Length: 322
Image (cartoon, rainbow, N blue to C red; front, side):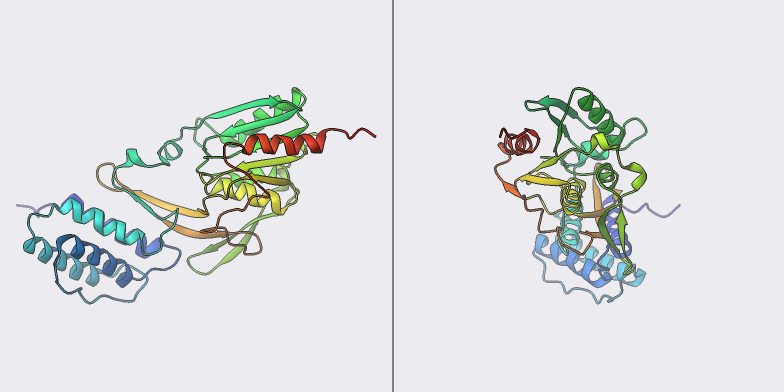
């Protein structure tokens, strides 16, 4: 007879441990990860079992895994009425809370994830010419798949609005929970300016610039306002602060979420997914937005942000009578 297959709940904990130990940008140690997981399981069971001895090594340590599994088995023997699946949820959620961040996350039920549409490639886009010749575009996420590319879609909408007589751009990323492509969107409106500074797990740090080849022709270089709120995450925040840093946009609305970084995620059993932040992303000069958010230039409620931004733009493009 072959060896009994490892149960899904234990595989999920092991896979999450490997992800945190090998990918997290903050180089979490084996001890930090498994100690947090065991403490959460011990709280769930009401056990007084001692935490096993673990290693201060920022990597997977097989001996630590063996000690952790043995301690977990002891918890289950002590409290057999506790469902192992509940231990899994408690353990992985505790790993996330070591360095809580919008890019370090766990969804035991994927259908409840606020970024499900983004990951699965669904995106809505709306555009119209507002009074005063303001070219307005809203999109729900930064999606790039084999069948949809938000950058191509944005260019198409800009083209149409420009033909209709747009004299300014209102880019609406309220409720936009990020994705991929913000740096290239910024490049449409700047001249090779720095966009972000990326810092990696190994300590490397580099400034990413806008690609000059992506800059749009002169007729597209109109005044810009970007509307944001607390639902503006990640790539949407990069769009806002990078365009402002380049002197190309005014930010209108509410402070953004402060979820600025880069993620590596894996699927677990069932619908579950877990992800960790693998890259610190700041402003080009190290300006911190993660955990802070982007503060608007013109503060207003999310509901009033588009009207306020449109008024601001009309003042810029409407000739003053003398």
